[in-house]
Amino acid sequence: MMKVKKIIKTISLVLLTIGGLVTIGWTAAFFAVRYGWTNVAGQVDQDSSWYNQTLPLENNYKIETSTIEVISLPRAVTSSLGILVDNLTTSTVCQLKLINQVGYANPAKTWQTALARPELGWRFVTAAALSQWLTYRQGQETAADDSLKQCMKELLNKQETLDSLDWSAKKVLFTWQNGEEWVVIEKALIKDSEVIKKAASQAGIKPRILVSAAIVEQLRLYYTQRELFEKFFKPLNILASANKMAWGVMAIKEKTAIAIEEHLKDKESSFYLGEKTEALLDMPAGNQTDIRYQRLTNEKDHYYSYLYGGLYLAQVIKQWSRSGYDISSRPEILVTLFNIGFNNSKPKDNPQVGGSRININGRDYSFGGLGYEFYYSEALNKEFPY
Image (cartoon, rainbow, N blue to C red):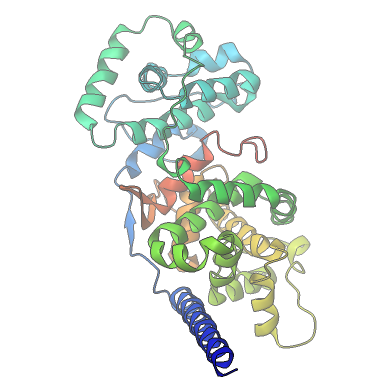
């Protein structure tokens, strides 16, 4: 009898110890995110100046000179494949060709999308090629740029070059798509696809723009607190648990949530979206702090988390629009602004891409750069089209 009691006592102590450790881990994670201990100092993306080469001229931005080629593109949206190809630069075509030649599937998938939807126009192909090129040349800049210049000299027919891309290529170019983290995030976002589309529609933005910001937040949580999430969240289906600790899938902080709510009501604010959205975040009677927290940390329904994030993005789009700048189709700027906050959203020519630094498998990304890379990748393009 004494032996049985001793065994029960030992098991109870072990269970209590495990429970205590888990509680400590969850508490540490909560306060790490709640008080910003997981934040990484913001910075300007080292490739910031490259992104402006895909801007349409009517956006009133100053088009910067690329280190490879000055790009001058027409105002009209391309509506046919022939016109699309004519307006692509040799630089863009060569970028796709060179990356495809070493076995990466991304260029062929980009061209496959353009063949199916030529109305996306030159900007889509140019931006996708640029995203791939910035990743491909990482660490081999001189050799890659020399190869690009040589290709541009020798390129005779853009259409033939694009048609000759190897569709059997298998290698995945983007490092964030090569880990188990992406598999979990991808499945979770597909599961949330209808909720994401509803929130984006309510906010008045493209679902893919909203997903671009959500994905960067999730990748940040995985890779900046690797050990914490490996120990306490991975066994519990990571994404749902991380959402609670990070105030939702969009990692909305309380002060940001309050500002989003206030902008919806303030007709004098440059972030004001109009009467149709004023009531979107109205709360029932009760403790608003508690209601807001419950909305953002609801593990069973992420709608409000996505809605707050979508409204944030819509509000900065409106702010910039009032100053004469259209950033509605610039994921690199929107995700940067999502990271650095309302106070740092200052409409201007040639805004810089950047934000917090995220290291994924040895490569440093900025918030905006990673958002751009996802947006123009083939990832989740069926669920969240361009």
